[in-house]
Length: 136
Figure (cartoon, rainbow, N blue to C red):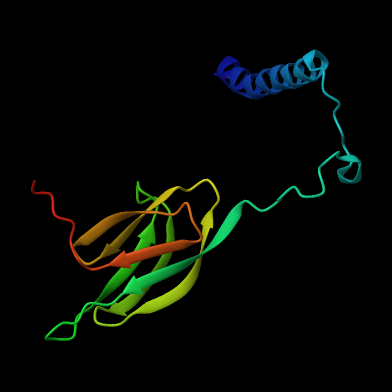
């Protein structure tokens, strides 16, 4: 039992010492300068530090006989990240700004059972309630 406790106590120490050696080795093998002060970084004046973008989200309403309210959701394609969610009335237009990560090229917009993939490469995302026809 004592050996097991000693082994469990020594494993984290051994693993952490290996990591330190790898970090030091990586720094020695690199030809780049390592700067530890933010002020000493050599960056172009026009460099954009932001990792997000602000886009206009336009919803084009669809006239209906009855009032239809559902949750409108803008999310990542895999659905793991939600960028915008609100209850929306189908016959109303909407314009709002949402924040997306810069690397996101497409988003999934969901309204009840309506689901569309929309491009987010420009500063504007447009969504309407007309389903996409899959028939040829």
